[in-house]
Image (tube, rainbow, N blue to C red; front, side, top):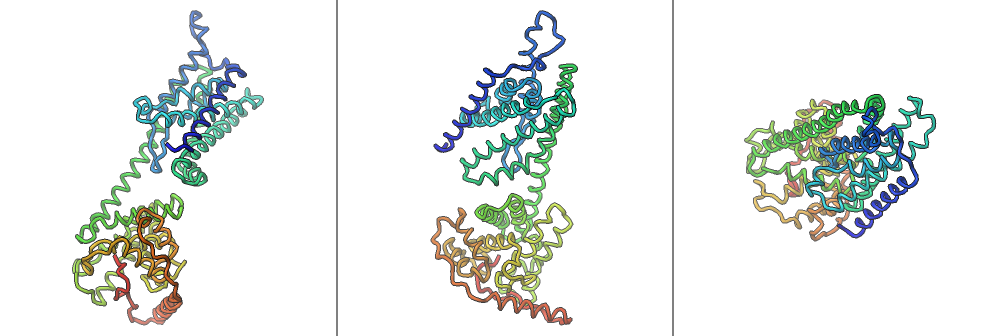
Length: 467
């Protein structure tokens, strides 16, 4: 744990402690939290028993968190805390959040002490603040007013918790707070749907305290829905990965190629601070970029001699074929431009559409660099001795502005794949994009005129950066 992180956790924990102490000293406990209908002998314990009830319900909701794809943990203990906040006020909100949010992994000491402190501070302080805000709302005896006020207090509670978590993660990992908030909002905003459930729990509890247990069913169902979402996504990803491996293994030289391209391209995307949506597209695009090779005959795909012009045209058709194969899968729509255009050259002399510069989708430009680096540093039939990482980086720099986007190469150098390499720096940019653009225009004009002359293809290899 870094010193900055330790100081931040200490500040958050101290702030939560001060808030709880102020609530204990200044705020009475709302009697509505008490369990009514008890025998006279235990009636004086109505309020403590009510607090214990909501602590146990919160603990049950927090005991089985679901790990989301972005690494965050979600649980349904949020709803009982909001209900306890509405019933008992700041003191009860603080106690229920502090004690009830204890997770099984914390009891088993699978979380370091400072992680436990951060987790509990991140929910206790926001719960107390939100309870104070809820207490300021007048006329809560009106059900509509109470419903709206409870929902807004739940939103405040959720937002403050997210902000604290983002601050801690930003301090620990160095990622921008804004990005973390965006990621958290995108993945967790559905938790706010539990606010109406919390309000209904309050109303049922006021009628018959034991009826609050009935809401264990929708809470568990919500948790199960998150779990199923994660499982389905993992199954989808594993299926895509298996499909990519099957294509790669047709050629012993490219076994594992797609997985390595995936890792490199995602790392480049992170260095460029791309959105999580773009990173996910790179993740799947890296695996599927060569899926079109499934339609390339073995006589071409596995040929170790130089390809003929017709064979090169067959090979160069694989991006288009790959995009056609994936097109029916709507979930993979963001990946289609990556698959189709990952062999476009920055100067317009690539394929299949001879796009130039920024006309090439940015994610396709990212994957092109990753694909080339992996291909250069692995054995291929046309080059049995792989290039060293330093030599491969030199090629990326040499062909920056020609084959590769120089900005993407700059981002590659900032990744773990290029950070420790000797970097020759950007090469002088030549005015070849205009040549490529002119060639593409002439080719398009010829096609429009009905010419059956084949396009010029990348029959030669000016760079070893060919997968």
